[in-house]
Length: 622
Image (cartoon, rainbow, N blue to C red; front, side, top):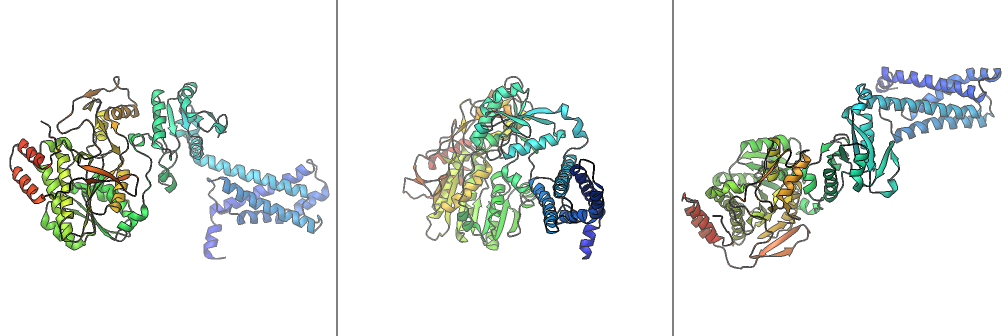
């Protein structure tokens, strides 16, 4: 026996387990004889019992060792462990029975004793393992806190719901007691899961909640569609119940989260959309082994771009942002979490308006793919600073595109916005000008770079988004301010938006404006009301909603198509291509000169008027 095996099997834990199993086997063997002979064992069998005890118990201990019972973690005891224990003890019984037939019962226990020995041993060891599991999952305090637990209803009586029920029952310190399941599978209604009744279908939530005196519901189907989550949340809201949900399925599978780590349902769960199938092979072809640059890498979109791009193992990734704190947060929250082993990642604090430094960076890194996410995007702030919006969103993009073309970059993807469509704000107009600058650069004679812009709507939870504003207003006690009761916006999760940006980058052939399918517009008033409900508050009682009127540059609703553009399909159903109907050449040099001249004027109206001269569809607010 090697030194490692000696250490493994001659430690206090293994020796204690050996002694325990030996005692259980000996007691089971002894009791089996007593049961066989009704507690009146004949003298000849009593002598045989004593003579055979050594090798019979020894054989069983060897089989327990062979089936891994000495190596098992005692607090884990699930079906695979049951089967291994059963297999080891059954093998021992089969060996003894075979010996009985070979030796015709001589010096071998009777057949009834062998079978009884097997059953008692299995039940005793299984009971011990179950007790060890209960002990590990329930601390001392768990046994005395059950009466203080909150009644909860679990939505979904599938595998996840059953696992959650078991966890909550075994961990009373979590303060939740499952009292009923709801499930739309009619075959499950009236049945029990871990002793808890599947009471009714989901639509009867209000009735069941009243019957069981519960104030909380837990959604236990992590792969459910957003529409389904929204329906359950509405039922819970109407019934006055708070709603929690289990972690995402990806987190459960990867082990990053446990079923019992519940979280309150969030707005992203209700406004987001079902997962979109991406052409991962196409994105992999675009990024694998390439030298990639992301500007604005510390922002909401930029940091998610960095995270998703790393999944496709580019050769190098250069992350640029003008704000040092944004780069620091990117390093801490993304780059330290993601696996960057296959990619050389560089971060740099750099203003994209710095042409000289940009040219050095392109030359040094020999960039092949650029994702340009750096921009000023706050509508209201830019409305009073049109020169800054033009400088950062338009002129910087124009300059970056020129340098990228000179350096023979393969693809250049601009992150644009739906506010560039028939813009009413300076921010939207500046992004429209940025799009036009790409078109002009695409059409230059020496250009080989494929330029494209990707438009999409509001990103849930991004800095400056209405959702973030509402959360802060709720945290301070309100009121929540909504500009107009009828104002609507398109919403996407940042993960979905960036995934489709990468998809769009594979679709563009050069000179494209690509638009993401943003689903149905959502009323901002509905968003405010949902957030109040999700916070456990009541509109008009705990917190008020006030209407402030549309601010300068804001639209009542966002549009999906430009006045001068027509729609074309792409190979992906969630990505569309818009093509300008006019074939006239764009004189971007003249536009730049006019705007730069106007930017020296301190009169905001002069700058807006110059923008409108070159963007006729721009309708500035008075």
